[in-house]
Every structure is written in structure tokens, then in C-alpha cells.
Image (cartoon, rainbow, N blue to C red; front, top):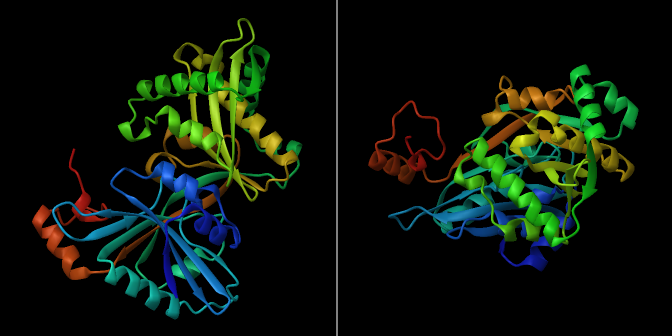
Length: 341
């Protein structure tokens, strides 16, 4: 009933047999996103004609013989096929719980994907599903002009200014990639980003060469000298476009070329018959910060962003909390991995 898949071909074959799959569910993305100490595993469930795949990163809990599981950076959660409209997940939960218990996995955390069907039905009554905020979506099934009609007036002004001063090109060479890497690193330094967000050259190279999803890297160049000044990387699979990474050189922030690149991608994706462009949300799910305000200047089509938290082994979980002396009011999950600043 349950199989742990860790090889590329079987993983992607299973995933591609499911509906509503996103780039964040693929084997390639998991291998890129995982840390050295983590194992990328697709927990594959089959019963009669029902299929459910749950991609996770499994890691050992330091100082123990126990493990926990988490999801990749992005929007993951389970994918499925042939679920009836009124799905009873009792058998799935029982099978998954047996697998987790036998493999000493005491907690599971996963970000969910609002564009993938049936995730909450699959996980209902097993752990907790929590609302964490809103994400901003551009509906690509609308016409290009209808999409633009929802743009804030200031956004339109900024896009027009950027198009007057910049050219757009799609990255196709190694030099294009290196230019973007330099821009991205400069951007991360400016915002004092966590080291997690500093990716090596091979990360971008593998994204651009993935065969299980399409990656498009758009660059903005200064019309006066041809120098790349900004870049934005998008991932596409089965009609879902993810705004993944971006950066702008410090000296060109006033031109706001990233706004133009998002506008360019949504027009291209519309002609490619994609159905949705996900711009994501604010920091930590906030709807009050400047990041969310920037994204919501494109659209007022908001979707709920939710996470799933599961404690499989309550006894060991509580023991780890006590050993770490985690404050009772702390809501970080799993609590024993909380790192006070």
C-alpha cells in the first residue's frame, strides 16, 4: 500500500500520473532543495485505483535515533489521482501512520499548495492544517488586457518607465546565468537575507536544465549599455507558473525592472496557455509588509496559504521538548528544532 520512492524515474512517473502537479513536487526540485543531511522521499500510496504521493525531506533528529520530515521551500503537500468526490481517507491515514511509526518519524511538517486539488481532504483528521496568510495570484485564463486592468495605477507607471529604459532577454547561455547569479547575490546581500537563500551556481544550472518542469529566466538589460541589471526566475509545470527568485542591481533599483519582468512573464505564460501565475505572499505570510503590498499591486486574487503539522509520536515529541527546554508559548514546529535568536 505504501512505498518510499527515492529514484528519479519512479518518482516522476508516479507524480506525472497525478492531477494538478506542480514543479515543487518533482524529484529534481527535491534533490536541489534538500540539505546534505536530508533524504528526499516520495511516500507513494496505492489502493484500488487511488494514488496519493506525498513528497518529503526526511532528516535525523540530532542526538537521537529518531527522525522527522519536512517539505521543500515552496508549495508542496500531497498529489493524487482518482479520488472520489467524497473521499474517505481512513485507509490512507492508517497506512501512512504505520509507515511513519515503523521508520521512527515522529513529526511531519509540510507547506500546502493552493493550486493542487484535494490536499485538505487527503490530510483531514490527521494532524493540524493551519492558515498562515494569503498569496497573490494572477489568473492567466483571463485575457492579457483584463489581467492588466487589475494593476494599480502606480504599477502601470513603473512598468512603462522600465520598458522605456530596459530591454528584456531570456537567459540561454552560461554567461547569462552567471550574470543573474551575481545580480541575485548582490540583492541578497542588500536585504541581509538568511544564508539559506544564497544558492550556488549549480543550483541555478540544474533548475534551467530540468526536464520534469520548465524554468524561464528573464533578464532586464540597460538600453544605454546592454548591461544586465535585473533577473527573475520562474518555474512552470502543468499550467502553474511559480515566481521563484529575483534580483536587481543596487544602482538600478529606481528603474524597478523586476516589475517589468513579472509583467513580461504573465503575458508570455498566457500565450503558453498556462492557467495561473503565483507571486507568493509576504514575509512569514504577512499581508501588511511591503513585499505583500508589491505583489498585490498586480492582482486582488488572493488564495489561502496553509501548512500541515503532524505529531506521530507524542511521547517522544514531549520528551524532546523537555530536553530542549522549549518555552510553552513557542509556536515553532516542531518545537524541539526551535533556535532562539
